[in-house]
Structures are given as structure tokens and as C-alpha cells.
Length: 291
Image (cartoon, rainbow, N blue to C red; front, side):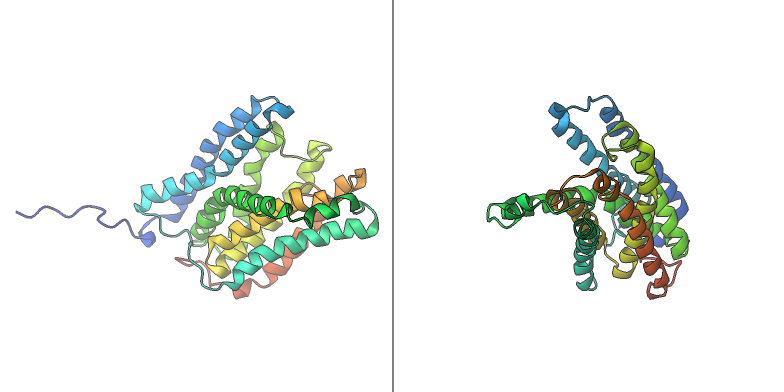
């Protein structure tokens, strides 16, 4: 007598799963997993001696969206299909790298030219030294590794799952809102905020991440690849948090303007998001499967 076929011999078809249930499960797991690192961060003194430990907690939290996405796909699909690990057009890789570098240059360049935060000429020779090259590539690799943990969750899982039952505007705003709110515990209980008031940090951070979320959703859908989002996120973190600041003189006005918690990035990303939203007709027709 023949044995009955396995219930999931090759995994469940992606189209056979309920995207709404998968999205809810993913969000719950992401916040649940992340809460471990949020708690550890809140219990760790914000002193120089704990810098490495706090960095480990931060990177651990950044990989929780990926862990939640993998767990959700394995439970519902019995496979890991749907993340968008391929690449249809390599030109989008260039876009993922170039956009954050150019955006940062516009932001910091404006501060340099206006005198809000002048160029730190003493540090210019550092970036042209041969000894700078290994550290540069190592920093890029580390930032992209950390960003991959988030992007496999937000743009590798959440965006394409929302695209199965939503149009672009709705999915871009909802995915960006979830992404934005996920940062709040680290802002309130960790060191992820600007040098001024936490409320100022929130006021500029929310619109900037909402705008960036729409841009990243657009890039993910048009390219069909999560790697574009990974590169965008990783290069943004490196150039905005490390590279350009080294070349910039610290001033009070500059701190209010520059970086992830500066007013310039909020204005810039909202404006750029409207440009990408305007070209939403270039995207695949939504709702759709396997975007």
C-alpha cells in the first residue's frame, strides 16, 4: 500500500498563503524579538565603556526583522521564496548606492557652502590616505550587513506581502509607519537620537523615515530586488553617520540641520518621496503576486 503524500512535499505555494495573516504575524514577531534587545539596551548604562555592548544590542535588534520574516515564511510557506534575492537589472544596484551618497553630499554640501557647518579641512587628508581604504571598505561591509537584517524584513518581506492586497501608496505609507515606530524604543531607551531634545529628534525623524520608507518601497518594487534596499540603507548609514561628519566642523546650527536627526534630511526625503510617488506608474500594477 502506497504511503500518503506529504502535506508539504515542496513547501506551500506563496499564492496559497494569506498575506494579511502573514503581515500581522511578521509585525508581532519583529517587535517581540526586538524587545529583548530593547530591554538589554535600557538596562545598560550609556557610558563609553559599554559602547561595544550597545553596538551589539543595536545590530541584534536590526536583525530581528529578518529573523521574524524568515520565521513567518517557514511557518506559512515551508520555504524562503519571495524575498527578492535576485536582480533583474543591475542598474538598480547603482541607484541603491548612488542615491544615499548624493543625498548626503547635497545635505552636507549645503552646510559647507553656507557656513552653517564648515568643512573640517584638518580631516580632508585622512580620506585620501592609502591607510583609509581598508577601513572604508570594512565600514561599508559592516553597515550593509547590519542594514540587511532590517531590509530582509521591511523590504524583503513586508513590502511584497502588502503588495499582494494593497496599492503602492497604501503599502508605502503603512510599511514606512511600521518601520518608523520600530525605532521608537531605541530612541527613548537607547542612544539612537540627536544631541538636542528627544522631541526635536522625533519631529524630524518621523517625516524623514516615512519619506525614506516610500522611496525604498518604490526601489524594491521596481527592481524586484531586496539588495537595492540593503545597499541604500547601508551606504546611507555609513555616509551620513560617519563619512561626511568626519569632514564637517561641529556647530550648534549644524547639529540641528545635519544627520538622521537634522531638519534638512526631513525636508529632503519628503520632497524626494513626492518625486518617487509621482512616478508610481512605473511600478508593476498592484495588488500583485511575486513582485
